[in-house]
Image (tube, rainbow, N blue to C red):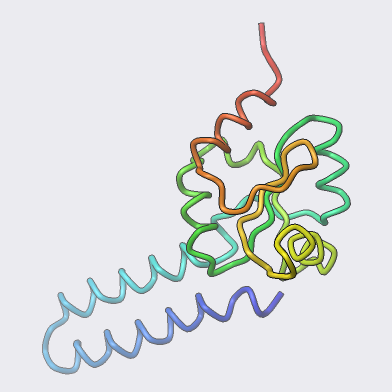
Amino acid sequence: MMRAWILPMLFVLCGSAVAAGEFSEGSPGTAAVLLAGFLALAGVNSPLIFPRSIRAEEARGRGAVDGRPVVFWRPGCTYCIRLRLRLGRSARHAHWVNIWRDPAGAAAVRAANDGNETVPTVFVAGRPHTNPDPAWVREQLSSSAPQHP
C-alpha cells in the first residue's frame, strides 16, 4: 500500500521545496505555478485516478462472467496512466488489478510477459495483451458493455 504513494509524495515534497525556493527569491507567481504543476504530477501518478482495484482472482472471475477486460497496472507507470486517461469514463467498466497490492496479479503479469512485470497488461477473454492501444481497449469495453433498449 505504502509503495503506491512513494512517487506522488516525492512530487509533493519536491514541488514544495522548489516552490519555497522561488517564493523566497520573490517570485510568488512562479512558485504557485510550479507547485500546481508538481501537485498535478502527484495526482496523476497516485492510485486516486484509477478505478478501485480488486484482487486478480476476483477480477478474472468477474471478467469471465461479464466479458469485460481485466487491466493489470501499477502506480507510477506512464503507460498505465496513458491508458487510464485515454479510456476516460469508460475505464470504470474494466476490472483493474494493482500488481503492487496483489501478488497473484503480479504473478499473472509475469506469466504473460516472460517473467517481466510489464504493465499495463490487459486480459480479454483470458488472453493477455501487453500495453495495448487504448482505442482497442475502448472497443473491447464497448463490445462487452450491457446493451440497454
